[in-house]
Image (cartoon, rainbow over all chains, first blue to last red; front, side, top):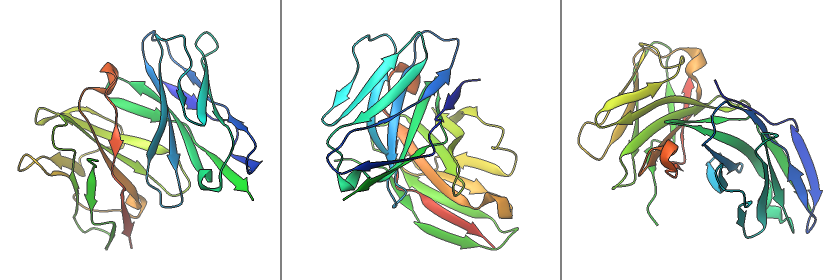
Length: 112
Length: 116
């Protein structure tokens, strides 16, 4: 079974600064997908970014980028130029065929 | 922009009662899912559904749970006899292709189920 570990329960960042969230996973598969989801206080699940394991290039979506280290099974999320609206819980997720396995989440608070 | 719609947003029920949570997936999607999140915990996979049958289910999805796509547009999750520990946010999701083939998973905004 795949496991996803997010070792940082909470992170705080000053507005306009950069914050990096860590995620590691365990799998014996070679082809898979990784995702970061944002869950604001409304509790809706919003896809932030995804990475295909067969791609070496790190995915980027505007202010969000990942550092994907396949050998280390690491998939960190960097939020640049943090905004107050980025305050949310962030979940790392690993794709396994029909389902996603989620990490425990990291609460990010952006301070004004 | 197409979206996954869930109703109701909040559901309160008495322990032992049956509940049905409803979802309307994105219209051309073929794969459907239910996830749940107990308050303060991680999001957990319950079940996936394709071609009118369950593709995969987790240990949580026991005989008390069932899913159905009754009319080609709705996708429902039924809990036969609710327990206190079923209290959670239930998320419906859909994708055009299997997640394993890179299908994007789109989540609904959730139904908060409270069992009293």
